[in-house]
Image (tube, rainbow, N blue to C red; front, side, top):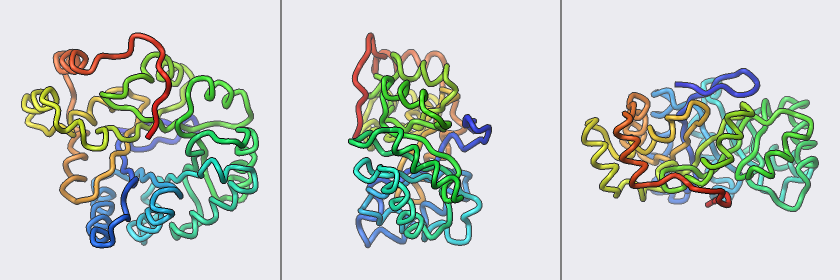
Length: 274
């Protein structure tokens, strides 16, 4: 299962996130094994950020992908406080050093800050010209922001947003706009940091499919053909469980039951972020 970027390149619909990884040295070896297992299973879109652990997550990813860089579609993010034209370049170079690579496949503005979008895009353009990034995109931008962004020169490849069964606000206006514009969405926290796993409704749907609640939550996000998901999984078992979501197709009955438990928005809502 893949999603096509505006560039024409395809990426795995299900990848791996790294938020809150590399925070406990005792778990480091297991987290590296988890990431490598994900690569073995085809979850080769790996998302990280300079913010995560103050760069420690990038170093962890760098260790996990050693010798396998060409298999990976590697994503990182610049903090808004660093997102001036020159600051974006410096931040990217620091991320590349921690990751142990010479390029990112996708570099995102983590959220909007004080620097104009045009200035950040100048930094992205300089990095692309130098071969340090292949593509760029954004994260946590709402519909007004996206309309402003797409009026500027360049080609945004994705908008990474908080989206899951309990965070359905984007369905009212942002997701339809993305579908029309042909710009995929990358869903972070698709299992609501594990809180959805306690839902009796997800458990009921999961039983019908001999699946896990996490697989149901991921399959629900992946039902949209222009959405990728990047759940964090810090153990090999967790990664394997997530990967099985790719084989789960929810029925109309399943979707109706989930809609009753987690109603879609009835009007516009502010974009949420974690």
